Image (cartoon, rainbow, N blue to C red; front, top):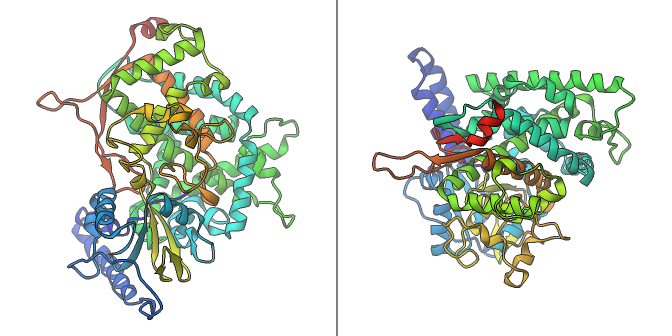
Length: 534
């Protein structure tokens, strides 16, 4: 899993914390702030000897404030900043943020380079270990060698079979309907994202981790995962731990979740009749190439990582889809029409009369596929992906020196007007064109969930060795939730004083790009569903 690192946000994040603190704590945390700034200043002088005559460095974006560099411009609107610099410097350039040298590589060629760069040249571990290890725990993901992490990912992937997906659809439908019953029949103002975060945890835990885990994950788990989520803040790029409330809450949540999973794992080991191979079982049975197995602690930490990775992207994507549907109500009509045609053979079956669907039928909801892809294109959960350069690397004739960060941004290529005309428009039909119009780019082995290579404009789930292994599950989970939501509810955006729709802006101050808080919708349960519940 990759996380955008906007290093400049670290300073603003810590500054906001200091401003809100009582005076008696301000001096202590002010000292931490000063120490952090000193570290940045000192590191800014550690420039590789990259001015040798045989090297050609990428164009440099000028700045007027030393150390700070382009931190503000990138932090406020990173995609627009990268697009602007591309127009002036081309698709490879270097800029400074808080003393760090960031070299951007953009568009399909840049995507291909970033996702396939040799491990000896640039690593994700070097960019993300301080960020992920305290949240997930040790012995997994970026706390181990890449070869070990790839084997851990394979253990999980082995559980994601077609038979498993077939069993997931009714589970997700059951969990989603039960969750919607907890909502009122009508709401004039409803904050969407927190509920979608909890719903995705419920569905993912039940499907991927087993019924016994789901039964122990009540609403308090959403709070624990919120606390874990606070570990994904820009300040954590530099510091694994500081005496701040968010760090205490993060560590407490990790401890509780680890103990919970260890207890479930021990109970599972006592059973000899377990037949379903969920992720927990796959991790327990998995054997490394050297003949060893994962420790129980590593399994518990991998469960935290697996559940959290899916919760991040799915809850964000579900929320953005619902907002886009409220802003484009004609798309809802098309979604319902498609369900009716696939499930009943008629285009106008009322929503409350639509039957349940199977995994095979869900795959036939191709327009809904387009809705999800178009939302991911406009609102990618991760806008920038980083690698730490370990040794000088060449790209298009330029030398990117060791110590720099490489920054790729599929978010930029997904807004390319040459590939996506009128790129800011929400148009699901971009992904439902006939084969003659280019839809072959979106199909692999008959499964329309991915692209042929990293040299693509559209990579919402990454590519190469770091591609998200939960991509296929995300389509099953998100499509099922949206299919049921539009059946049961009518919804709309909130209005401003002039009666115009309020569409939430993207919040780039977080590492996962969520709707800026607070972001509300108004909804009403369809009358037929109200009667069914009475």
